[in-house]
Length: 357
Image 1 (cartoon, helix red, strand yellow):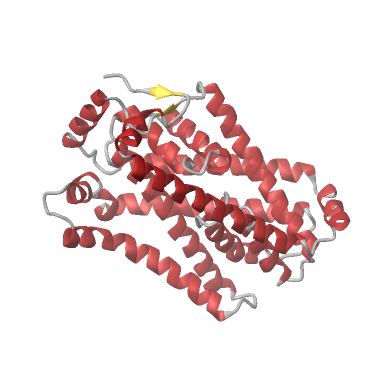
Image 2: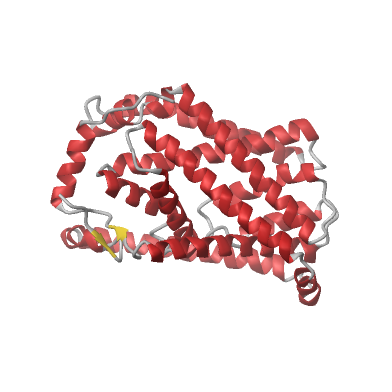
């Protein structure tokens, strides 16, 4: 059966809405409340950081930024996203997805666009999963490759910050922050490896959850080669992105020790990745302001740094938008046709794992 594609990912959920209007109504209210809360957090954080800004001074800082450096940073950021798309390909291939690298690049860049511009119910991670799942008829496994890709990146990000603190010192950061960062990284890593144990403990032995964890996703916990390669690629990406931030700081003539970037950038990235704001807006800028002013950077320059980094994210996401348009501006539906569901069930029953490489 062919896959169902359309201009909107919500075309396939009409039957579910019709069959349970009360549930769909409650879901809509929860989603609207969640989005309103995120908007409130972003607006509140932006208000707090911008109310102390001398607008003329900040604009002068931005106008004086080295444009060549900024363009190089955008290029490095895009290259870094290609690296993370490669990491996702490594993960997905281990559980049976054989799409070429060009497809993973396209899926990833379209997802990057929706991370910033998509509706609240359709983040970039879900878009990536929809594309990959539609291409192979295994939506559930595709979604879990995205989840593992995201978690592995966050764990490695926290690891970078912890190692930087161990190697370079705290740079005056309060001990509670160091403790929270360390415990967060340990909690994410330990929590991930506890998933199989918890599933076996609380779900039916012959149920879908156990089958998914014990068979379809087994390499995510047991394949040391996969875990090692994933961590190695993640480390390379985070070093590259931190180098981009150092160059961005140079573009604004900021006098900040290069080693400090390896501490504050991972921490701000983790904070902005939390689902409490709109695309990290406000949280990211407040985080940069707090960490940079502790190193003697004036508030206006610190906010200009955050704004300039957002410009880099914006420009890169627009590239993802161009990829989306060039691909036909179509996203697979959340629920395919009945034939698709049957084909997915068959595919799940016939999962064959390639050898680790």
